[in-house]
Image (cartoon, rainbow, N blue to C red):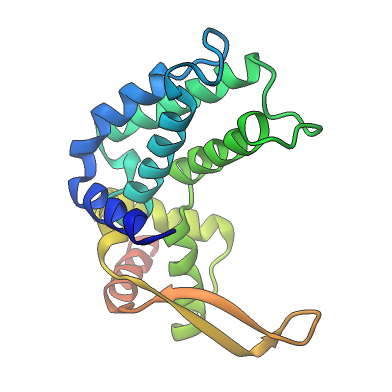
Length: 198
């Protein structure tokens, strides 16, 4: 979350699917059932690769829209299985290696298969800017439509913070959401999506 991280995110996102074969290779190398956590920095390399997959999926192009991306997601799923076999991801574990690393990878895996970080911003933007309220099922259908027709849709707009003065949390503070800076293309795509539903 520093300038270096932002720069890495920028270039990995621009590379898109070109970065996927190497990231997939690094993810496949990570096997805590065969190597200790510290051996060859495999854990740290795994963390970085998972983070970069998340950057590509959320801000560049949906992973599941290409064969390279599907292979990367499958590799991540297999890595999670290896971690489970090694006894990681248990509720009583609180260290990074066994718990947090597992949770981060599992979260990225679920995002890649379904609704991503940017998709949640799209959903909030449609609700806030256009009064369009989508259920989770409806949002997934829309995401599948976008992924099939416009796989690079996450790159259409940057995000910005929005303070919703009409909604308050239990402490009385206004709720905050990340929304799209340029929502017009998403709204047009949603209009096209609605036509296909008819």
